[in-house]
Image 1: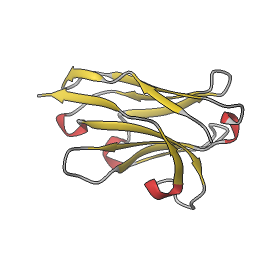
Image 2: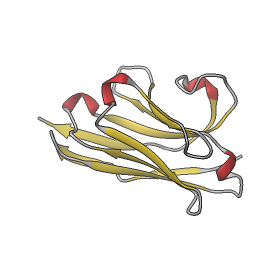
Image 3: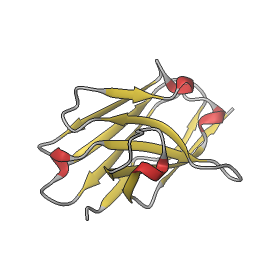
Length: 124
């Protein structure tokens, strides 16, 4: 099982940018599809973005398309989420996920390993 540690969250004004990082332990990182999810208070955890093992395919929820970019560096065992043009509705705890066994990138239930989360707060 891999271990994941997110970083890069914080407080930013609307229209600003943040880059989240997720460092993954283990020698099998390059085999893993990776995902970013978020959870706002009182809401279910929701899909944000995902990237396949090679980085050749990426997936986004509609609300972040054109603003967020997921990428990975397999040499550094790290996946990134660049977030631009942030909005107050992007405020949430952001989680990195790995070890996909389910068929859908968009379902939290498809991933077996999770980080502890990093808080992103966007002020209006």
